Each structure stands twice: as C-alpha cells, then as structure tokens.
Figure 1 (cartoon, rainbow, N blue to C red):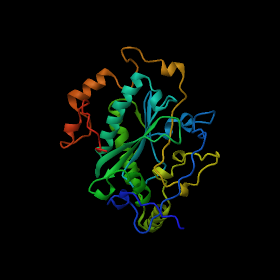
Figure 2: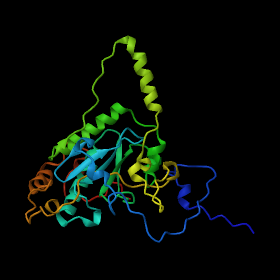
Figure 3: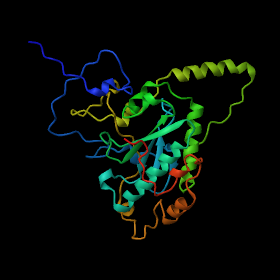
Figure 4: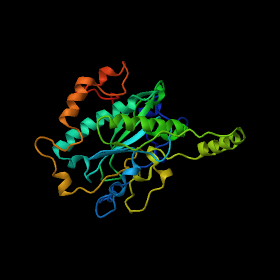
Length: 302
C-alpha cells in the first residue's frame, strides 16, 4: 500500500509564494536529543565578537550595523547587532529599551530610501548566539514580494547594481549618524574612463553581475549546524535562516555600565526629546507622520 503524500499547505497557493509547478514535502527528521551549539556558545568562536568596526556601515558605543558582503536582490538588507555578546533574552533593561529605539531608527532610515515600500524586521537566532536583527527592504510596487517569503525572494531576484547598493548603504549610515555614532559606508566613487576603456568596463560589470550573490538565507553565519556538528550545504538549506553577527564579548564592565539615569547609552534622553520635537532626518512629508519617537506602528503589519 502506497503512502498518501501529505497535502501541501495553503501558502503554496499564495501569490507571494516564490515557486510553482509540482512540489513535494520533505520528510520530517526525528528530533535530536541534544541540539548542536550555535556560533558563540559552548566554547565555539563568535564571529561577531571578532569582527572589527570597519566590517560595519555604522558603529556606536553599544550597537553596530552591517550589510551583506555584496548586493543581493532586495534594495537593502542590514543587520543590527549588539556589541556585547548577549542574546535577545539576555539584554538588561536599558539595553532592551535601547534596542527598541535602534530598531525604529534603522527601520526609518531604510524606509527613507528611494524605491522602498516596507521594511521587514526579523530575528531567527538558530545560527549564532550573538544578538542580531535582520532588516529587509521590500521594493515599492512589488506586491508579489509582500509577506513572509521576502527572504526567499532576496536570493531569487537579480542583484541590484553595486553603485546603487553602496549609495543606499551610505545614506543609511549618514541617517543613523545624525543621532550619534560613526558612519563607515561611503558611496561609490565616480570612475572617469577614457572612451577606449568603456567597453572593458562594460564587460567587467557584466561578469560581476553574473556572479552569484550571497543572500539572507545563504549567508554562512545564517546556516545552523546539523546535529552531527558538520557544516550544512547552503543548497540544502531552503528555510529562513538566521545569524550574521558582530560585537564583543559581554564583560562586567560593558553589561554593568548602565546607571539609573541611563548615562553613557547610545540613545540618550536628549536624543529622544530631539526626535520627538523635530522628527527624523531624511524623511519626506509623506513619512513625517511616522517620524515621532512615540510611533509604535509595526513596519509591515506582520
């Protein structure tokens, strides 16, 4: 007697589902008795803690923002990381409050870019023990990309141009620097070429565009180790991934430096008053209604 294949879930019929044609479900593996350690726990080296500041587009006293190594299919994919080696549930109260303000600031900065309709904010955490939050920009007008499959579409769409990508990174870094910290991303510099070299430049650009870009679900840090401790094959990981990281180890001095008044934090009371009074920089009239610090609307409604 043949096994009856399970019915496919309804979301395979959604307009946002990236695939069509015959699809079959994988068989679910048996649960393992002990999960393998993530990066940064059980004496495994934390790549986030070992990353220098120049690997980021913006750095502050307790937070850093980094991008993918090269352009992907979405207008912008960024990762907000704590400097301290802490996971989400380990944050002390003041850092937790600061995470909320940093999340809103970064969402607004990305949403201020041309061609961005929504910003999806995700936290998975299966690949790394170091806190990191993903921010994915959904292109304006691309209604088929709405919803939970945006990270999959990032690896399917052709990469955006490197010049536009670098320009977007520089704009976000400058936006965040309006509230403090240090911007490290710079836009592409104009490369003046003699007419005789334009053909070579075009060929080089074509070769670069044909290279496979590393997307959200394909990033090495986002692929959790299997139970046997061996690295997973990126082509076998067809699920929303999770971790790319950076920061430094949590020390008593870092975690214990918050006094009752909140002094020394990246997000100060003066910052909050300034944002409330004047709104966010680099926002147009259509977005000015969102630029109040007290705005608690979710960026995507999901």
